[in-house]
Length: 433
Image 1 (cartoon, helix red, strand yellow):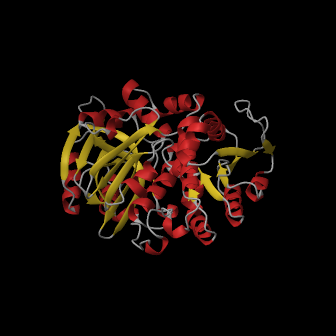
Image 2 (cartoon, one colour):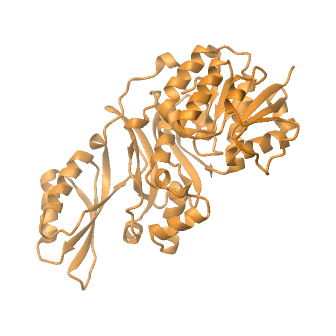
Image 3 (cartoon, one colour):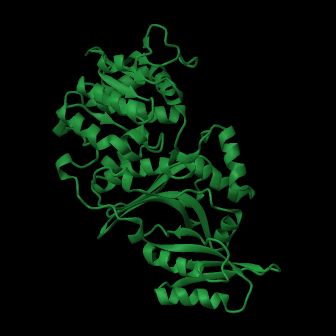
């Protein structure tokens, strides 16, 4: 059989890792795929000294790769939204299969891309777009195909997890750890996507579509970052038996699908609570299998390349199949996607951790608990720290309540004369049915 020719667009961290894995493991990869796979062309603005591209056609025009009649599979590793979208759609229009690690592209433009792929009878594979080298997309789409997925929750951004780990283990402040994360290359100069949950929301959008058979709806994801978490919050969470993790959570409810990224208190005995540093992990709850956990490196050149190349092998294995015989892009057949709505944040029900700063006066706690009682909010635990200052921190753990009810109660409490500043609120999840 003739070799399958691959064109790689982008020769940065992941691109160079993919190139080197394909070259180094060429024999093993070809044995698995059933055909020889060769890198025939590279599209990149500049050479990468970590890659020996001698004997390979290298062009600075990535669109030349997408239109090259010799190329069978285009690997998009340039990142971003607009240029990547145009590149992928051009490749599809020219009959190329596509492999991408671009979570932003899939989360925002995936519906359009998959429709174009269906029309042109080509595949778009995107395992590397979520959690780096962890095969979580294949697990949900294929390994758990017998299950109705109830919920999933994941640490899907290594930068945020590194920051929360350092804050807990070494008692450091957020700003201090963020600066180190930037120095180590874990965080960008502008860390907004990582620390404010946007990167995780891209990935969660993809996972939720696979789990629940709904169209990609990134614009409806609720996102909240970790920049307001303090050392006090970390310590109080530990006292209450919890750890703070920056989680992406999606849950099926009778009213719709929850799609949310935010700091979360989870019981510290859970395996997910003990995922440290830059590692990623996703927990999935299915009605038949129960809870399963997928753990590993969520980023990096070769861990991500592992997922990219696995997708290339999958594509090669199915080159002779028509669309209807291939694994659907979003796990469910396109005609069977559900119109189950994504719930607005105000309708999501969770428990809450609240940190309230109050003036040390008699009756303050009574005022707070009365507001909760009148709002129908049950209190699970209260910690009132002794202090010699005029301010006293009050920590409250509530039972589950809808967000809009909690919003109203917090507004009432913050309006009391005895309350200082904004109340810190962190959602609490037990991660069980």
